[in-house]
Amino acid sequence: MSASDRQGIPIILVTDGDSELSPKYRAGFRVDFSATNFVVDSIVDQLEDKEICAVIAPDEKFVGIAANVARRLNLPHNRVESIQTSVNKVLARTVLSKSKVLVPQFWTVELDGEIAIQIKDIRYPCVAKPTSLSASRGVIRADNNAQLIEAIERIRNLLRKEQGNDLKQRILIEQYIPGSEHSLEGYLSNGKLETICIFDKPEPMEGPFFEEVYFVTPSILDNNIQNKIRDSVLEACQAYGLKMGPIHAEVRINNSEVWILEIAARSIGGDCARLFELATNSSLEEFILCKSAGQSTSRLEFHQSSGVAMIPIAVEGILRRVEGVTDAQSVEGVLDVRIDVRSGEKLTPLPEGGKYPGFIYVQADTPQLVEQSLREAIANIGFVCMPELPLVVRNDTAAEFSS
Image 1 (tube, rainbow, N blue to C red):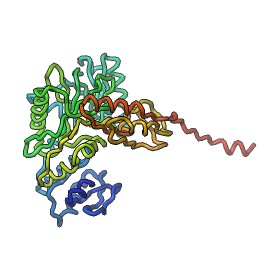
Image 2: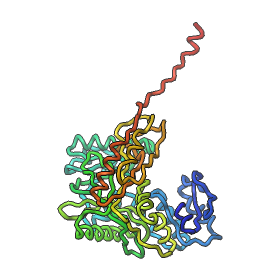
Image 3: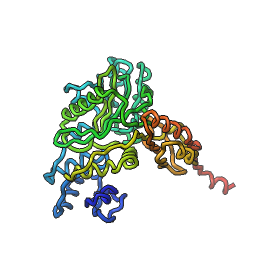
């Protein structure tokens, strides 16, 4: 929405009621997103007298709705089937396994079935993950049968908290691929991929959990490997059937080969994208908005090496206070430290937790200096928590007074 203000591109905001509707360049209306079967009809009905040039989803939860609305309005869009593939890990693995790109060997487990029978042929090490959660939630490595059973039960409990007791669904088990992990931010136009940047993740991603902490650009990978990443991501997009819009891809490099972990039809999540605004002359949101509206826009160029750290949560508890923010801000190269949690909030580490408590943004002369400053800044941040205490309500007042 800030990007629309800066670019002077009017947008209509469709919201569930949590967002503001009336700043300078915006109009909008509210719909009930929980009414799954009617939400697209409701949106389209209210746009009958409007001239719309594009439909944009700012979050992966809404990419399917956006594609359906764009289809109904005869606007450029990705096929709904392609979007469904991108948001379901089992569908994605099935599609990619039939393409030329390298993907881990995978299996599926029905949570309401006999687990021991279903996992008897699985090879180790492996990684268990829910089919639809993001941000590494519920992603757990297992090196043997006992660890895998424990991981599956942990995922089952996470999904029960998220979705209730209806667990007639599958989880994905896939081969663990060793090596370094990287992500690509790009934009598809008529099936052609424009690479915005490639991020390195300098923290070893070996498990048992896969918390993403550091994103650093430009990549220090060999140019040939970077070109392989671009080619593999484009081939994966083609396999999905994706032809337009932002792309966030996750890959692993093993023995100079590129293995596709995920292709999402959205931009990078959380507040990571704010790095573009701090370190370039524009923002990722402005770039996406202009591209979607068919307006010309310059490339997003980082003037120096840049990076963002998602501050990890080490201990579960109720937040009392955050310490060391001023010290973190004083580290050389730090552009900003953003804390998104408040006293009284519950902090939950991965793999169950889904919210990062804050972000640190850095710019420096080299990727190595960026990583060094990010690590130093994170070392200064401390979360003081108290344990979550159970609430016990006793109904013995009557007995006390009667005596």
